[in-house]
Every structure is written in C-alpha cells, then in structure tokens.
Length: 405
Image (cartoon, rainbow, N blue to C red; front, side):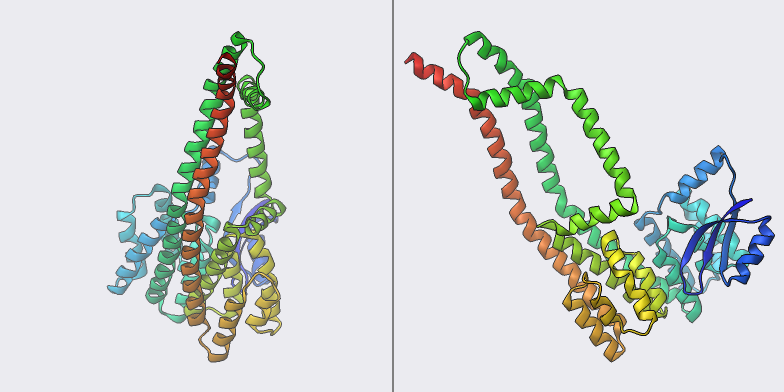
C-alpha cells in the first residue's frame, strides 16, 4: 500500500513523502527507527473521491496573510490572559468565519488534544502555512515563551504585509495607465482603422507606405483576431506551466533579477525576506542551521533561493555565516558586513533585523524613483503611438488636399 507522510527531520525540516509499506503500523515503526518525527500518515488511494479531491485542493490553498495575522493576534491575547492553549483554540473556533481555516483549526485542536505539539499540528498541513510559522511555534515551545514568540511572528507578518502592500500600491497606477493605453490602441486598430481602408478605396489614391502598413496591420488583426487570441492564450498557459517547473521557475526569476529597472528592487526585496525571516527565528531561540534552511525557503525568488542553498552545508561544516553567504554571489556587501558584525558581537538577530529594515526602505525609495520615471515615459510612448496612427491615417487626406489646391 502507498501512503503520504508528513514528517519532521532532526534538523527541523518538514517533509512530505510517499512511502510504500504493508500497513500503516509497519510504516510508522520504520519511520520511527529512522529518527523521523511523524506528523501524519494518510493512505493514498488510486482514484480519489470528490471529498478527497476537495480536501487536496484545500490543502494546496494558502491561508491569507491577513487571516493568519488576525488569528495570531487573538491567540497571543488569549495566552497572555492566562488561558490554556486548548481553551484558547476552542474560543477562537467559535469566532472563526473562514470555512477553510476553521476546518484546519478543528484538526489542529484535535491533534493538540491528543498530545501533539502545536507546531507539529500546524506543520502537518504543508504549504497552507508558511514554514516559518511552524518553526517559530516550535522555538516558543522549546523556550516556554510561546506568547512572546507569537508576538514576534506578528511583528514579522505585519512588516511583510506592509512591504508587499507598498509595492502593489506603487504598481497600480502604471498598470492602469498601460492597460488603458493598450485598450485604446486595440479599439482603434479593430474598429476605426478598417473603416479608413474602405474610404481610401473609394478615393482611388496611392497611399503612403506608413498608411499601408498601419491599415494592413489593423486588417490582419481584425481578420485573425480569434486565432491571435487563441495563440496568446496558449502561449500564456504554456509559459505558466513551464514557470511551475523547477528549471522554468528559476529561469524566469533570474530574468526578473536581470531586468534593468525592477531587477535591483526585486533583488533587495528577496534579501529583505531572507534577513527578516532569519532574524525572527534566531530571536525566538531556533538554532542557526534549521533557521537558515527555513529562511532560505521563505525567499520568494527561486533563483536567489537556489543560489543561497549551499550556505546551509557550509555553515553545518563549521564555516561562518558571512563567509558562506559571500560564496553565493547574490548577497550584497552591506548584508555580509552586517552579518559579520552580528556574529562578532553576538547580536546576529538584531543586525539582520536592521538590514531588513534598511532594505525595505531602499525598496520603497527605488520604487518611487522608478515610478517617477515610468509614468512620463509611458505617457510619451503611448501618446507617440497614438499620434503615429493618426498621422498615418490622415496623411493621405493631407496629400489629396494639397493636390487639389
């Protein structure tokens, strides 16, 4: 029989593996002998039922950051008030409205009731929660300061949400401007320019090459609109599927970093993610090696994540963190110098927090600079395209009027 196992390694990593065994009891015995922590063992059926498919889809869906933030704020408040963990979870189940999160929290409560630690209960749900969350809870359980560790995670989550909100809000206006401009050009090409072709056919005049090119392009677009739309849709679907593969995702993220304007900003944003995650875990009492593994996994850019993966083994072999980061080639000198100072003074978590704050401010400043350049550039570019279309359309009229005079 085939089973799907959610396991924890002695280094603090959470794994999801498929194993084959004669029975669940035999599999659990084998996993225990291997020194693995067993979070959940589920039998894998050949043809999943509708309920299994629905459950699988829900497990792939991530809990929104804002929902997780509110949950942890309430949980920290209840724990600070002196309520036991199980009673706090029961009270929160009465108030929780998100059906997916409620279903998850019921299972978490039941596992905690059966003796499983809270961190293990959340870790068993895989990608529904950030890996940093389960690791943070585990650090709090080890030190006996669960409420303080949760509040530290709340501060981390607030910074992440705020940083992403600033980036998204900064990109809204350029996206709307580009969309409206493309829509205007599309309407002119599909509905306006073909009418001028009929008009010039009746005049029986020789058209300039610019007019022939513009009207010919609009006619081709109008006659083959369905095929062009299908081709674009197929290209987008193929690109998305390729982007989900390991090689495709790394190539796309590497191309993003090499883009002239947004590349440096995305690079700094990835470094800020890494430094903030590592600072949070180290401040919670988590050892360096598992903290490093989880922090690298929290980086959204897959190219940066791959390049930084070698640092874990180097640190495990006894090399200092700043020397290990220097070998990756993706961590800038400022971060390496600050890490070096933090290691020398024993305040690595504080230094990493300062670096992440600096990178966040630098990302916001650079985004404002890019937008201050992008908006007039887009206006000039789109205005130039529209003006070129109008000139190409009305140029034969001006030529005909000149001939008549």
